[in-house]
Image 1 (cartoon, rainbow, N blue to C red):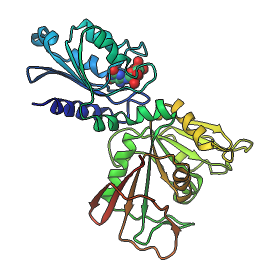
Image 2: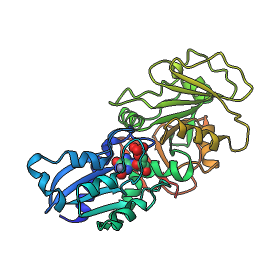
Image 3: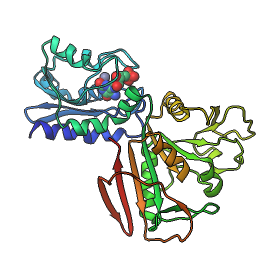
Image 4: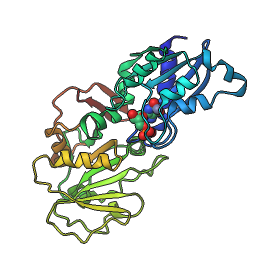
Length: 346
Ligand code: AOF
Ligand code: ZN
């Protein structure tokens, strides 16, 4: 087995935490003695033990004496600060682990290379940069939070074969049931889901995770005028909601589960300020589900990391034009007759 193989295992288990770790990153760790994994663990939940702690705790009694001769693989640089949990660097040193292999740095300002520095200063042999591109993808939402003060943003929409996203006054459904399940899986993995008022008024979506297991994201509703009806599904108690109303507008609608916040939608930098506010709400991964105007606002402000776009065989003769992506897709999948394209903004 190569270093890369053990790192891939770290990534695989790190991803089990998706949707539950923000504002902390997903992290996976494996403890390896002579090509055998004697312990592994991942960061399961924000506020809970770190991956390294879970990996070391998982080692069986009969293998514990091997820990001081093992290599610790971690998808992210071990932390060196007292946060909600004590520093993982202390734990590594206390367990006398002689070698640590890291994929990518933790860009949190208080760590950012210091975790590795401390380990090296104490004689630990540290290797970094193993499968680093993939490690960065796994840490992407944490890194968006600490370097950009915003969540990792995924834009998602479906369009007809002739490039229409929908109809101005009635709901149109384009994609098939398998694509719908996939979108609900994405919801379960997201911390927040954002839509504009028109989408609520026309489609009345619930924005919950119903066709897949797992939690529903926090619903973020941009309702500049504050006049969406309180009976709208997004204000029900099936999930938490942040209702964003423009400063100075009064609204009688308050979510049954959540809150209303006032921000000036017309002010310059509104979206930046809102994203920063969503970080305070522990939203590290945000799915923007529409509609056309809202998606376009994020594209124009260059506030996006990924776009996942479905194109169907349906032709909608008249309707609202879908936003135009300026670059080429990097991945394309066929889901029965739906085409799914992934775009990345880097
Ligand atoms: C690790 N392993 O599994 C995770 C890390 O005390 P907390 O939980 O708030 O942790 C804050 C710091 O730990 C911060 O730098 C964050 O990026 C990092 N998360 N670090 O060594 C882990 N989840
Ligand atoms: Zn840690």
